[in-house]
Length: 225
Length: 225
DNA sequence: TGTATAATCTTTGTCGACAAAATTCCTGGC
DNA sequence: GCCAGGAATTTTGTCGACAAAGATTATACA
Image 1 (cartoon, protein in one colour):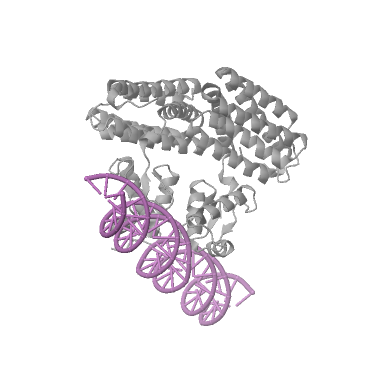
Image 2: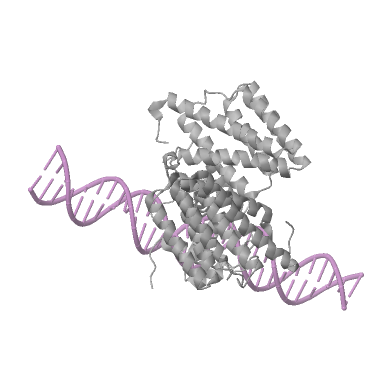
């Protein structure tokens, strides 16, 4: 099984990235380059390249002369995270209303249909994933690479935060999200910037409130905000 | 001249990054790994690691099986850049007013003093650098890593854009900037969120307008907005 | 002469190896 | 029994080398 030249590093990067986001590699766990090299049947060089990229993404920390570690969640400041998340929800929805093209809308609607199906069959993991894809589609319609990259990073961090604090995902995203998504699509299609902004903000703040409520309920896991 | 173990990659990264931002390496120019390795008297391994990091910063593009290139400016969307820049000016100034500590203010004031001196002696390059440092200090006072990293990237891109379009820096930042900076400091110190936001926005939009004015004047260099 | 094809050269992606740094384990002393 | 110091092991950072992919040059043919 020969792999194509140049794909080694990317392959390792993709797999590792996914395992970190899925918490198969828990935060704080050390990363052994040699073991990874054996596992993927490559040398240490592409493994190290993948680790450098993951460090740039903020998913691993690269201590000098020491083993790399999956970046810990407690280094994430939750207040910063919520502030940035709300702002990016707002601005991507607003700019999508301003700059979207017709093909953007079809992509957004497809993601929304997938999200709706996940909600209907009460598949919590799929809800997280499809909700994320829905908002990434909106961010792509906003046609601003700066906001897209920050938003992507925020949603990735959010996945890890949710899984760390509410590991089992027993809490389901409500039907209400489906309706809010529909309203956002309508505002984007209508090109109503203010309404899109308002909906994005309300949607984001509802998510933040929900997370914070769960956190106060589980005060044993509480961390300083 | 033995260099310390582990510093090789970082050394190459720092030098290259600075040369890219200073346009000593112009956008679009190819990067030869072997030549860099010889120049820095290291092997290709740390050079490649530095290039991967720079690619993550968006400063170089890494084409598979082809030479890496300094990322071209025309891939930057100026509208996106301006949108993101204005928003980050606003939000960092606002959050600095909300979350700053006393040591943040002294750091901000130091940067402002350096900026004032640069304006007084009409040192254009120093103006750019100290103005950037001033706003980074504000962003650090805002205590939000997400916004800080995006803002840093935006200011770096801004340096390259300015140098590409107005290579000689003959245009000087006006005294007015010094006064606006003072007003921002006062609002931050007073904890006046709305005023800080308003000043940040006005400051940013003035900068954007100034750049756009220069661009229309030099329509020969005009690109699509 | 211009173009397509083949041979050659250059440059990247990957590998195994080695040395430095860190970690672990062992030994000796209290 | 516990701690300190040092040896041995493990793991990282760097290196030189080789093969594959791309770029370049040379060649054959129309």
